Length: 254
Image (cartoon, rainbow, N blue to C red; front, side):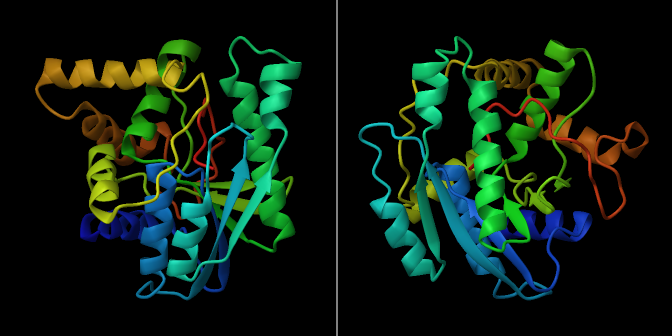
């Protein structure tokens, strides 16, 4: 966990993510990323430079066979309040709308539901489990599918609900998350969505792997380093409030 916490501290200090008195809702999908984020923030609150509180929120998608009892028990162990709310997003996206490309609409509905629930519960911020590869993949999606340079911000202010979204794991490599989740025995819930693994984001993940083979180095690390160190392009502003719009996020970590 030392590397995870170090990366979170780096992101927090660089982008001023957490302020004293923040009540942070961690969007927990049941995947490895959001569970590790929850575990890390539960530890981080013990030595963070400012005091803050946590709770975990899961939006159920009503996929048969997805059991979140392990996640609930994990939250109890961490002494983090847990809220599970079943939604009708699956029915809207797959049964009613019958979307051929469901990810964009699903992500939009999930974001809206999570934002509103977190606000109703008195949270000042929402923490999502996007990691280093998510940053690089989103950058490539914007570049190749939209023809522009854009990506989600480390800190995003949502003026409609007056809440901020933070992404504390943007410097954490995915391979580290995979290994740490296994070592800790995190109660990962398998994603049963039929679109999982068949998205534009998965194609960018495959492209990153190919690029790493070509340059014989970690392509995601190179891309994120370029983003973080190239302030004149205004991708991640160097100031303490980075309020860039979210973009192309097919799979929000909620």
